[in-house]
Amino acid sequence: MKSKVYFSKIISPENVLKMYKKLDKELTGKVAVKIHSGEEGNQNFLKPEFWRPVIEYVNGTAVECNTAYDGARNTTDKHLKTLESHGWNKYFPVDLLDAEGPDIELDIPNGKQIKKNYVGKNLTYYNSMLVLAHFKGHPMGGYGGALKQISIGIASSAGKAYIHGAGVPEEIWTSDHDAFLDSMADAAASVAEYFSGNIVYINVMCNISVDCDCCAVAEDPCMKDIGILISLDPVAVDQACIDLVYSAVDDPGHEHLIERIESRNGIRTIESAAALGVGSREYELIEV
Image (tube, rainbow, N blue to C red; front, side, top):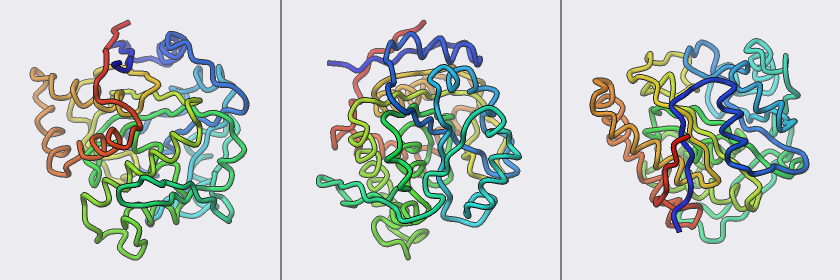
């Protein structure tokens, strides 16, 4: 059966909440809301004001993890200051999942590249998760969406190095590229399994740059805004976003983003996640 992906061309904080309600999936217990705090200097990330209605509606805690590269978010002290300067703790409780060790290990018995995923121990505090993703390009992954948010996004700082290095943290920037993409899919599978269906994915296609929100110096958006997509299936919601990019033939910037995706073989993460059973590339796009 095809996965359902709801889509709206109207991009607003209020419509994010409307789309969540349309999905009709209640997130129970203590809700972790995976955000992207935004690297210091980045101009494209989606601000806390944009996400505020839906985060408050689910009574969620905004969660993040430290990075594995130099910048304003690679240590707990620096990351907390960045979260504060970007306004996240003005509206919501904020939790750096890997603020202090030790990490916990999520098993990936069927992982194609890695068999363990290392995440911050605070993940165990939560019963369900709302994944808020800003869909755009990415310098290494080709694109960033729901699958990236639950793989690299949920991994601890050490876990990020482990994924990037395809199981060898010392090869964080030199590992085989496709092995890195497979590792992202493996890690995504472990987080999806951890929450066992108590997880919702929202991708917002605006400020669409070829670069990620993790870039301190990022290109300005190259495409017009497209819309909001929401699903219970991270594979389907990412595939739908990719398909919308390819179908935007009247947008002169779509070729630039497609080049970024294809040159990094970005679709492989979706293919690998589907092969692992994380979700389906077959979907029904329901416009609302």
